[in-house]
Image 1 (cartoon, rainbow, N blue to C red):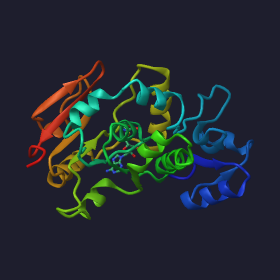
Image 2 (image 1 turned 180 degrees about the horizontal axis):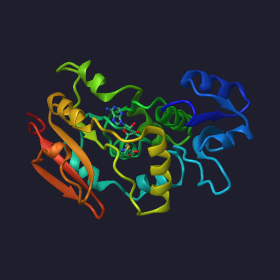
Image 3 (image 1 turned 120 degrees about the vertical axis):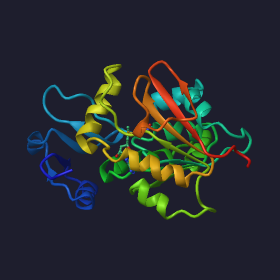
Length: 257
Ligand SMILES: C[S@@+](CC[C@H](N)C(=O)[O-])C[C@H]1O[C@@H](n2cnc3c(N)ncnc32)[C@H](O)[C@@H]1O
């Protein structure tokens, strides 16, 4: 991400600190228009916001709000739970190597999995961290229990995995690299556009899979659009499919063995 494409907008001290931390220019409401996207503190939290008159709504991470609560209460995300699987009483540990906005991790943590989230874009990680921190102030004890299962590492997942030992390696590793934006829903579109602007493509996802296959204790799960080819052309042991997406499962060793 080079300077000139993104800025931090705001006058408060915390905006200044964020601009310093991310080494981004600090702009006000008027100069923000020189950038297609800005990072801005909104009443809903730290947001990636498009600028200009036809701007889409800001993208924030809100684990307490509407969409997340719906996913939690309506039992959403069965597909990823089916893909990661394992003992229901003693859920396997998961590394989400491509955390993004933490949706998949949130679903897994809601179902009882302890999840380490790795995100290498410091900008995406700042937005995700803001969402995690806000949720930690909730008075909803169920949400607090979910948050206690989620831990963010702001770094490249390949580097992170290389620091792990046999004793600290996760049972399962989930990979969801960037893929060309889906036309499906306005929300996905808006998030994907903001994402593509901030992180671009993930050209090294084949190396991520290679490293995951030597790091995970039991299985690696790759999320793909339903019709996409296998990541790096490596055939999984099996797949579970939804309407638009597919999880490819690389089984290394049965859980419990
Ligand atoms: C498609 S998004 C993931 C969305 C996520 N599954 C969710 O539910 O919100 C991919 C994210 O993975 C991150 N990423 C890609 N390769 C990575 C790596 N090697 N280490 C850490 N993060 C990575 C990108 O910066 C991007 O934010």
